[in-house]
Amino acid sequence: MKQGIRSLAAAAFLVAALGSHVQAEGAVDWIRGELRTELEGGATCGRRHAALMGTLDRIRRLSLPSTGKVLVVNVPSGVVTAYEDGVAVIESRAVVGRETTPTPELDTYVTYVRPNPTWTVPESILERKGWREKLGKNPDFFEKNGFDVVVGGRTVPPGEAAHDPWSVRAFVQRPGEDNALGRVKIGIANSQAIYIHDTNEPGHFEDEVRLASSGCVRVERIREISAWLLDLPTDRLDEMIDGDDAANHVPRQRVRVILGYWTAWPDADGRIRYYPDVYGKDGDGGTCMPGQSDAPTANGATEIWTEYKTR
Image 1 (tube, rainbow, N blue to C red):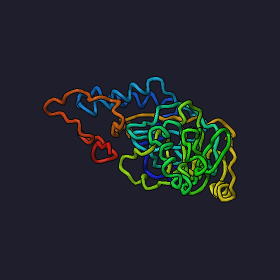
Image 2: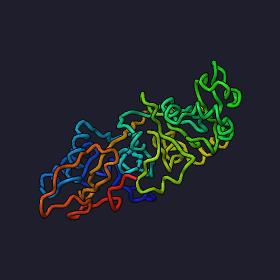
Image 3: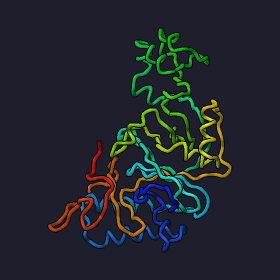
Image 4: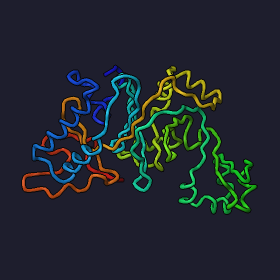
């Protein structure tokens, strides 16, 4: 692994490809084999058994590129990893969707990188949080937080629409430090309004289980990853941000993006690591028999957090 990369490989997607005994094109087969070996050993039960079964099912059609760039998010671990030619070059903590607004599993690609993004609030958030009602009662909230609203095709200050909030078709937050997307947004092709971005609430990166978004992925080292996507030094991206660049910048080559849900994963030594089943996709895995344990650390297994936590 390149120098300077933090030791988060256990949470990474291509960690298997980092072992000298594994080629990138055979990484998924090796991962499947390690998970099956653990499963067939007969020592797993309960949550650990469910994690192995669930992950094996979810990687059935998975393939890894051995060349080029790929950006990978493992939702249960809350980690995003950037790979180039099969080698991890950047790893970062990430915040993913809450249990009620989960981050979906996707296999897609980067469409653009945009410094200084605006944020057009999704209709689902407007309805869930009752923003139109709030506009009618407290337009100052939206003024203070840098929002404009769209009424009849025109962009107007919130105060002008407070008398008829149901006429508002969109809430748009202006660029800046207070913007919910932070200072950089990475667009990815999908139909669910999911993207990868900076944040104005970095405190959540310190959480043990990082479930705080409405489905998008917030990334701690977003500037480094964005610069890498565009083949730029990070200080050049900083200049673009400071210079109020707000254009969509398309990477020179297509960069694949994988948002995955893997609650059991082998590290480069074949040791299985377990992650919380934050969205309850694995099931309970059955009852443990006498002498068995579903504790994440049973029989020498390793987990990134001390307990399976959902809050």
